[in-house]
Length: 619
Image 1 (cartoon, rainbow, N blue to C red):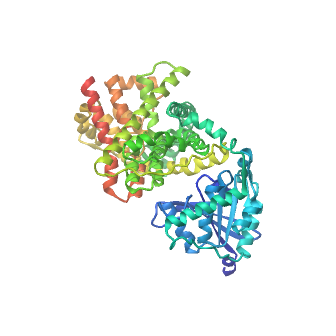
Image 2: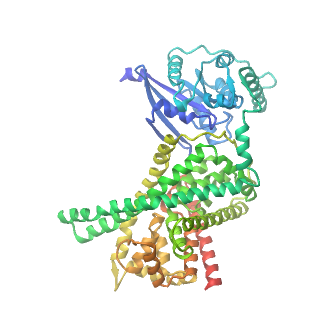
Image 3: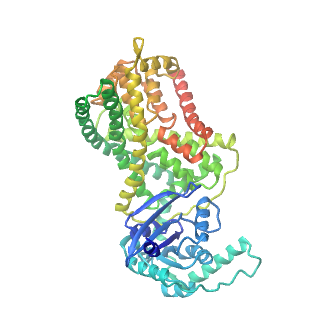
């Protein structure tokens, strides 16, 4: 065992955001990795391992950072880890297309850790932009090994492994580096000296045609970030993603539902064969299994489409442009511009959006983003929104009907964004007073997305992660729903008693008690709201499916639904308490019952007020 420990080497992986650090990490480890949080920090990290010449290397992927002078939790984690001396070698990844900016971090690392290896990545993109980097000259100026790579295509990785081995087994002596001579090492002086040194080195080792380097990116930015076209193009792209999600998820959802529900009766037969009592059979099959099957069949296909499309935009470098376009609106609301990114993540899943709020450095502004993320409808609310729009506001079938549905759904999202800004302004003016902080937003170069890695990352890191949490919440909820529907008190089930209790409030909001109860029962997963409504209307004792929207429309209208009812139900679908998975995530991020309760109350209050207003006007 001691021999194995002697042959292990720990490598710290450092770099600015958007330099291909994750690509280098994935290429070296071949995805043999695991993720987690640093102790006491809501900062994610990844660890992976690879073997080279019978020696095991553990790669610690530190958070992307621009500086080792900590201005955020991510930068603090990176600095503290490098200073701890736990790493045997530090690997700094730099971007060949903008080397000067990256060299500032390289110089800071050289003052903090040793031995150091520098990997100049994205050489293929640099060549396309007619940028040439003299790697030998850079190595001489820095005094450390420098390796060039194009990690996406696997170029330079063998040389990198060899250099890392040499650095671990035969490290170079650490040279004496002159200290800042202007003062006693103040932060501003050291930063200025580092930036000046980085600029001087870049001038020596980089040659480029200034006219053509960023021509393509500037042309695209004129379209995607200008005042005239930035927001319209952004809305069109989002509408396209929603339309593809809506149109593409229908058939897979039906097939998956058919598969999962086909196992229901064999499972029932198995329990009967084992002699299980009727109540256990009903609770496990009609309660737990049916609810979980419903959540998976309705939730998985849209997520499997939306998350990859969203990640493709992220990988192409577009999402920072979204934050740039919306920064002005969030600044006016007293919030942080990066909240635009977390809000977009909430469209896929509010739990992911809440976790994404870690990118906001200010605790006050991070909390605003967390508390308002549920104002944006997540993927789980789309089926209900789409069903209501298709049944009551768009008639007919075909391409034009689906486009009209997508346009109305886009309108719902625009309303949700407006309410997010309003809620952010309300919080920043009351319980979370303060001035919005300034921040530097990097607009990375546009790149062709890595489709394979995007699919893998979006499915593993987002889709399956969110689905796992949803199933963990849906299973016990299914048991509770079945018990409420099948245990009677007097002549009625607990479910109908609760619906009767909620009836006066439902009428005040232009709805009824069954609808309100369905939203409450949908707390584990928003996907089961409509099945709960059907279960209440039909008194079936289990979640109930519908064969077509026409059948569902007929059932709803038979129970008193009108266009005004549909509007109120649509508003409540947009604005109500976050699901159980998101509430759990909010508590984990804030460690506060008070803030979690406010995150629940704020969108719910907005939905109640809007529904009551519509009912007052239309009722």
